[in-house]
Image 1: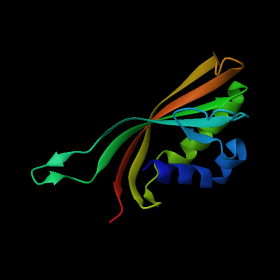
Image 2: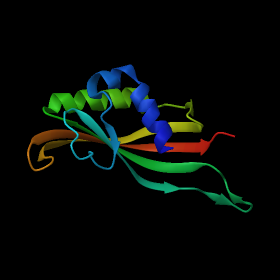
Image 3: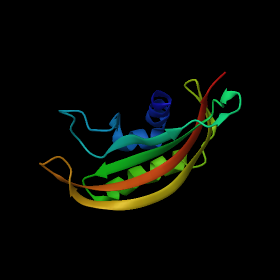
Image 4: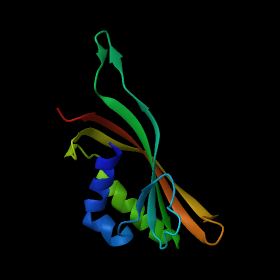
Amino acid sequence: MKAALTSLLLADPDLEALVGTRVHWLTLPPGEAGAPYLILQEISEVEPMHLEGPTGLRFARLQTDAWGERLADAVAVADAIEDLLNGYAAVSGGIRFERITKEMRRDIGPVDADGTRILSRVSMDFEVVWSKET
C-alpha cells in the first residue's frame, strides 16, 4: 500500500508542482534540502477477520504532514493532498483503494523542524480502506 500511495502522490501534477519528489515515509532523509515537503506515516492498520479467516480488506490510519517555510506553503501542500486523497477510490499500483477519507486536519507551527530551521506544518489523518488487487 505504501509504494502505491507514494506513486499516486508523486504522479499528481498539483502536488508535484509544490514538493517535487520530496514525499517520504517517517522522516526526511539525511541531506534532503528544500521545503515544502511531505512526510507520511502509517499510524495503525487492522485486517478484520471472519469465521473463514482474514477478509483481505485492510483499514489503515494514514498521517500526512505537509511542511513549509511559511504556513501558507504548508497549507498549499495540505490542500493538494486533501484534493487528491479525500474521497479517492480506484486501483493504483496493484492496490485497490476502496475508500480514502479525511478524518481530521490541524495546523501546527512554527516548529523547530531539524535543529536548524523553523517550519510550519499542516497535519491530516486519513482512513485508508484497501486490499490487494486480485
